[in-house]
Length: 465
Image 1: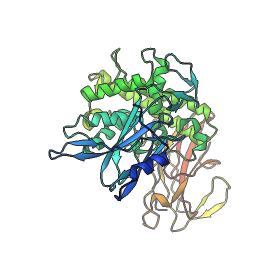
Image 2: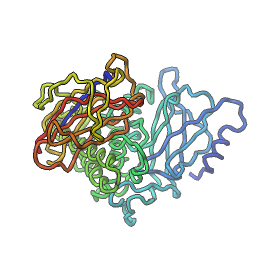
Image 3: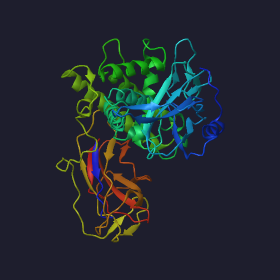
Image 4: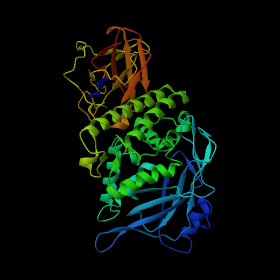
């Protein structure tokens, strides 16, 4: 894998539709109201019954849900819900979805989804859910939407073990712990998962959001691959039981419980197979990155398992497993061959060959390094990663909102970087370049800002195919 750093100087409740239910929640009171919104995604869950309850603290500091007697709202065809809550948005809330006979979930596992006593359902088609299916999530009503996924469900279950119940501190800590279990970037559980069955329609979607959505899909993928589990509820309930009882989940499995290693493996397989379902080359590249991350996560889990018990603790210190290969580490002392720096104030555009003037608002030249190749990637690929710049060449700060994207240029010699990939998303920091022929390949990257300025090219790194 090649790592480049871009440095900028440059039951039977009466349920109505969302609208009618929202009106019913606020009717007959002059209290202020506000909307709680989010999405239920495992894949998209339609016509699920959603309730929202504030989390209140008693005199002892214990946080528990305060029951709201309004009717549940139903998720729409996109899995979204809107709940009108009385009062001010000055607290945390617990959100819960329950399934009934009308609830449907879009199959997000390729090539199909299997549950016992039912015919397989093709990828992208709706399927029924058993009556015990539920999802929970929690969040700060002032700052965020509250999404409902299998991973947020595990986090809420873990947070309930806290002596103070569902306190903001317990919820935040549990979300971070679950992210650590699955090797997710901090804050990933707060992202709205993309619909894996419609990725080509989703526009820009980050690798972090894809990784989180695919981790959720893995819960149902295990039902396909293991006769021990009849429904997704079986998998989810087993993991929730483990988290609730011990604050841990099994690393490699014990023949009875769902294992983290199995989920990570299923996620890697799904990331691989999803690449064949999309037309977008950029999304395909990000899926390849997600596949790589899950393979590396499995390796780190296996390494830990050899020297520990077979579970992950619920504390941040014990629950996160160090990945021996950090994709974003900048190895400034690596073996990469670096091009000589130049004081020339012009650069050559990799797409057109036009000479582009370097101005004070342009980025300073990025720096690039190379780490050792990863044996989990195809031999004819190079995985690039970089860090977005923070300042311009004249020392002025540069915000992410001012970065329009990046351009990766590459070729078979340092002097002829005649191929390029434009990346129109400042949040992207990885790219897998594939289908490289045998020989030495050289890579560099530049930053593009929203005013049309280009940075100098980074120093050149290389990989032998």
